[in-house]
Length: 158
Image 1 (cartoon, rainbow, N blue to C red):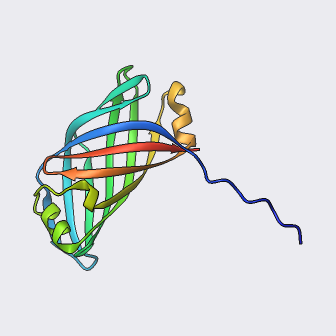
Image 2 (cartoon, rainbow, N blue to C red):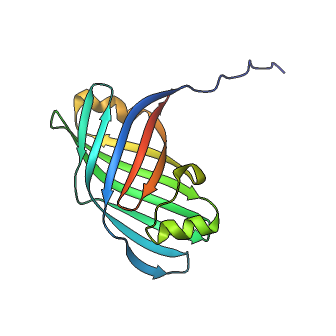
Image 3 (cartoon, rainbow, N blue to C red):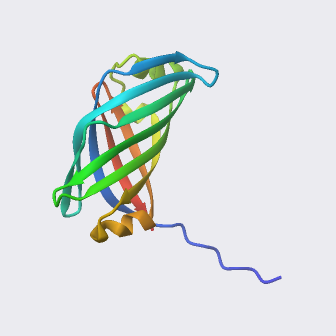
């Protein structure tokens, strides 16, 4: 049997910084899967190498607080670039940490982001020919939740 050479780890290339403004959570309540919450997205901004965009209002983060230390996040919203192109963002994430800190986040209280594991996998859809390449790449990111916003940094997975 021939042994293949070890594969290199894929590099990460900075793609964008986002700051997403959010409204007060709408608590659906305790369901069979966990505590269901919907958090409306009010707006925000994004910037990458040589471009900027605004986060359009109208999206939402559909959260499932699975237990006292884990939340599954599914955010959907649109960006409008400075050139007028629209980008649909679907961002799935995991946020976990000590139960007492997760409880503070759920209550909307500030928590040091260094104490929370918040990782995400954004994907993008666009009709823009100039941006088509982002629909053909994978991205990963890290984030932090603040009382009125979510800040994220996205990287292209090379």
